[in-house]
Every structure is written in C-alpha cells, then in structure tokens.
Length: 401
Ligand SMILES: [Zn+2]
Image: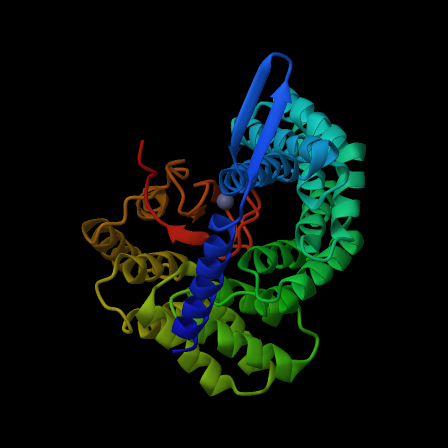
C-alpha cells in the first residue's frame, strides 16, 4: 500500500516536471568550430540528463574495478598467501612420498611466504625430521607446542623424539602435555604405554590397556614384582581373570596364594590352570613342594587327571615316572604322549634315557612371539625382541619349516 502511494507520488512529480520542461519556451544554440547545433530547450535538457546518467554509470564501473581487489598491496598479499598454501600442499605431498629434500625445500618456501604459521611449523618440523635435521625438527616442534590450536602436534613430535632418544623423563612430560592438549587420544595412550613398558612400570602400563592378553601379561609382571602381599594377590587374580590359559599368570596366582598361607587354594588354582591349558610351568609349581621322586610321580598323576589323555599330561607322567625309577610306566606314558601329538623332543628324550642314550637334541618347546615370531626359552611380559606386551605364547613341537 505504502509502496503504491510512493510510486504514484514519484510518477506525478516526473509528469509535472516533464510537462513543465516540455512547455519551456525558446531555443538553445551550441557552436563548436564550423558546427552549429540548434535545438529546443526541452530537447537540450533531455540530452544533458542523458549525458549525466552516462557519466554516473561510467564512474560507478571505474570505481568498482578499483575497489574489487582491495588495492594492489592486498592483491599481492593474497597472492603470497596462495603461493604459501601451494608450497605447504606440495611439502605435505613430498612428506607422504618420503621425499625429504623436496619437503624441506617446500617448507623453506612456505616459511618465506607465510612466516611461522602453525602449518608451516608442522611442515618444517616433519621435513627436518625426515631429513635427519634433528635440531631444526626439535626447534620447530617446540615452537609448535606453544601454539594454542596445534600444540598437541608439537608435543607429539617432541614425545616421539624423546622416546627414540630414550629420554624417559622428558618423554613423560610431553606425554602429559599431549594428554591434556587432547584428552583421550589413542595415539598418546599407546605412547604412554610404550613409555611405561620401557621403564618396566608394570602398574602404569596396566592402567593404559584393556586388551586381555596385555592385561594378563602386565598384571602377571606386576604381581611378580610387587612387594606387598595383598597387591601381588590382587594383580595375580586380575591376570588370571584376563587370561586363565596363561601359565605364568596361573603360577603367579598360586604363588601369591601360597605367600598368603592359602595352600589349598594355591593347589586348586594350579589344577584349574592345568585343566584350562596344561603347561610345564604349572607342573613345576605343582610338584615343587615335593622332593621324593615317588611322591612327585603320584602328584603328577593327580595333576594329569585334570586333563587326561593330553600330550602334556602324558609327558609329565612319563618324566616323573622316569625319575621315580618306574621304566614301564615311563615308556607307556612317553608313547602315549607321542600318540597324543607331542612332536617336540621331550617324549623321545624319555625313551632315549630308558635305553641309556643321551638326549636326542630335537626341537624344544618355546615361548613364541605372536608379533615377531621370535622364540624365547622363558616367558616375559614383553617380547624381548620387539618389545610388544603380552605376545609370548607357548608353542610345543617342531617349528614349521
Ligand atoms: Zn616379538
């Protein structure tokens, strides 16, 4: 409604103006050199109006052109920014391709164009690391760690370096800083676990994993090294709960129970462990309190009854029978062990001893790392070869060729 009124009013003003101009009397004469233009006053006003309109439009267009890029310096700045971004992108690609020289060159270019921006610092640090320029990498990571948004990446770089250098105290500080910069990061947790393992801080390591095999191994180690009886028992229970088939965990629990004067519970634990997964470590612990060979052979019978017919059950019977001077029993159980699938040298060694021959020198069972496949004679919470926790598993028989 208001619009319509406004339009009618403007139209009326123009109409009156036009009518007034149209009614103006007289002529206008313009002279330039030999040319003379003569026209009526209304026509001259119309021409002047058109010229003014044209000039206005022209000025607008020219002004627009100048204002658009915001002046020459801004245009140059935008170009620097763009070139800098291109350098960063190329540098990141070079990093991913493992091209240390290319990444380092692009990092230098990006730094010249953009200065110490977080992305430039990150590229510089990673390129320096890849090129083996440790000091430059450290300096860039340190600068990056002071940035608010990307501080985590700085601490991450420094933590990685300190771990490589074996500087555990410094690594610990950066691990904490990284954790507070990005709480709950799986990467940081992995590195803190690695750090705790290197320091053999089993309790700290235990708090950083929920993988059952790792929990079982680390809790066993914590139980073994704990000086407090109650704590040792708690850790051993945690280990067996995480993996009831891990013989060192079963033995650690039996030991902790024995230390707490719970001898019956200790024996029951070993028997249950044998039923779950027979292992010579369990037999050794089970028979340890007994010294007389005949008693040991009888106790072995009790233990073997937990898993009758198993190769390990037959083996422990064969070995204890041999020591108790029961050759017929020893031979029968050694042959039963071979029939049950024992392929390592232990059964053959019992048979050789019965014939008065030396050990066969055949394959021995071993703890083999699931990650790097390195065999170890003794169990350890972390693989001595690749340092991974909870990877050692009991393997009997000849290793596959
Ligand atoms: Zn390994």
